[in-house]
Length: 379
Image 1 (cartoon, rainbow, N blue to C red):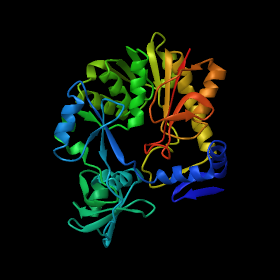
Image 2: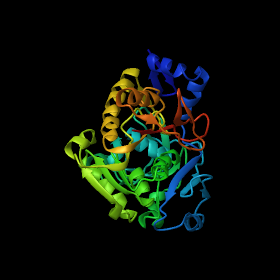
Image 3: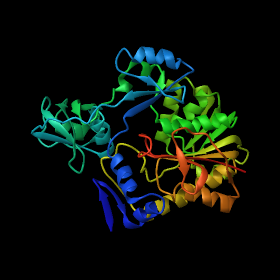
Image 4: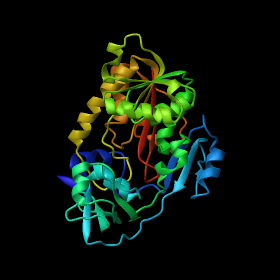
């Protein structure tokens, strides 16, 4: 049996897991919040190239930008909306992730197009998700057949989207490496590594490089792993743009086996941010996840935790999801099976974990942020 929260679908077993820790009204508020973006869009000032004050001064000439209350390097930009999107006679169907970006005001590029029947260059079009949700109105910059055939170039220039955030990657400041777009909760992973006194960190799930480059920005040497060569190349590209490549070593490898294949590798901190059920990522136009999916992911995540525990004294464990099984459940497993202990951490605006006093959660219904989980484990 599936329970549908306006396109966010969880099965009854997962719903019942949530009910053990929060009320049915809270479950509804959280899952409906996933459909919309937070009111703040965060970026991280790259303090090796520019001060946060200087970056605010530069960006505020184009749009409103503010300093975060707790994180010195964090800046945020108000997200506007929701807006009514004009109707057009023709549609361009975008794959889900591309549609979610366009929903926030991005242009649509050809690799994200699924189909565009009858669309000609210059046509007014609606960009829609695979399930038919209208996310934007814009103008086609190429014929629909070319969008699908050639898979490159700007497909639709967005004129009005449901929500609007600045197109940051088009800015000169982005090209110069003055900032990295990263959620506020995710920045706390790097901050915790610095607070633990790390000089050398191992990032087991490093792509696209947000946490890796943040730790490097904080003068921590990072050995970063990903099993996908294209993802590794993306990490390298980000490190170079930010001017941090001298502090980042990147390897193509399945990091579940890194302790076996690199027996002399050691760090002060090992960071585990593994694939998860993504129930904290915002906005989501649609999402379907079952308890069985969650349990399968949790078993996979534990392989990374076990490897990390053999590489460093401290393990920082984070996810962008909200389930107990993938979060506190994995911390409990690490305690029982690996003998690890949780460390008390200071993370403003996060709430105490479910049954784990030292764990921290960012909850969309408590503070308007993406859902996120953080814990520090030690030997």
